[in-house]
Length: 153
Image 1 (tube, rainbow, N blue to C red):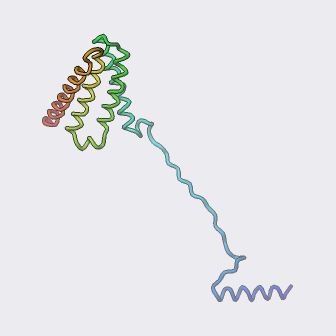
Image 2: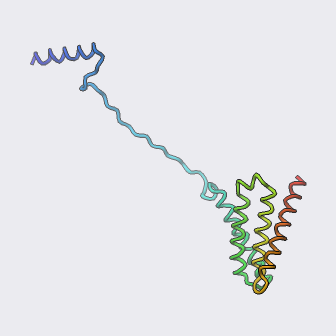
Image 3: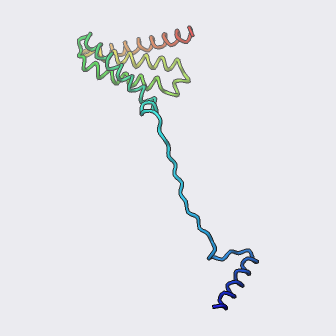
């Protein structure tokens, strides 16, 4: 028994002198890392494009229903067309590319609104011509309002 301790002491001394640590004294470390991200705000606050599209769809549905009701072409039909138009306008207004080009944004908005109103107000023979005319008028109004708004700032 004494002989084993003597050899163990000699081995430990040799390892210490050589700078190597014996395997019996090696320490092992173990750990884990977790990352938690707290989401603040609601879904619509974190996704502004979806919010603007939803708002545009709601406003467009109301405007389309009113247009369809006034023209006698059907309030539900007008609301469906208005929903699509409003969602399109919401996407146009929230586009990062069009924020750098305000004149193009105003023209695109006017074109989409004119197209939606033309589709909601017209049905039957000659619809294509009337829709094209209202789309052109909407583009011109969008350009005019955009230029006037930028001019009076």
